[in-house]
Amino acid sequence: MRIGERIRRIEEAEKLDQAVAVVKRMVDRVPEGRLRDVLHGVQLGHPAHPLLVQVPIGVWTSALLLDLMPGARRPARVLVNVGLLAAVPAALAGAVDWSRMRRRHQRVGIVHAAANDVGILLFGASSLARARGRDGLGRALAMAGMGAVGLGGMLGAHIAYYRTGGANHADHLVDLLPSGWHGIGRITDFPDGKAARADLGDVPLAVVRRDRDVHVLVGTCAHMGGPLFEGEVDGDCLRCPWHGSAFRTADGVVAHGPATAAQQALEVSVHDGAVSVRRPPRLG
Ligand code: FES
Image (cartoon, rainbow, N blue to C red; front, side, top):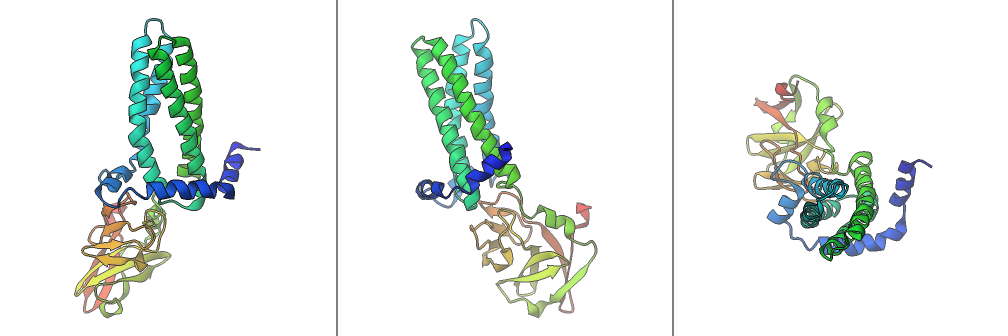
């Protein structure tokens, strides 16, 4: 059986649901707001978790290489400890992303986290062994830890790539937007202060009108594909009904996560009450 098929069996494992529910309740205690946005990567406009995991993986890999060299005991131990410190924000960022994913992502994600936790424990034990002068044991524990982290990384890659858990779920729609101006209705077709749906070819749009001011975003949420046109207008933002990501209606920039990718905004023209939109020409 191919390895991808084995991982897909984890997606179907209902027995993981209890553990998912327990951990999700704990992660949901991280309040909505700035801390959660930082952990998602909203301010970066890029998911933070895949950036943060580079540090522990990088320094632990370097420690293993130093273990092969004579006279590098001390720097190897320092790198093991740096990795342990760096694993904390990486794990927190992954946990808040995971808490806003689909069930099949979460089943694989809980095994991904467990493998990484085993890896962290093994590197922690390696650090203790090295501190007590038992360098041979420290090296063996670090190698075992790297194996666990490697398994965890493979499961994380499955969530991110196979199941597009961290991808922009609206990006393909940008390519389906036809070029040139297209009418989408009369301004009175769109309720004042609320989101409404229009369609441009195969692309759903979220239209937000405030008096004579009309803003139009691609209507499928970049985070997980939620129906943004059913969202709630909140100040100058449109909030997704699925997980609450807030996008500025004027330009689609993310004001609050879990989304980190901006929602594509269309150019809008209103003439004699007729609303027209076009895909921004700079997109090519
Ligand atoms: S689908 Fe998750 S916030 Fe929109």
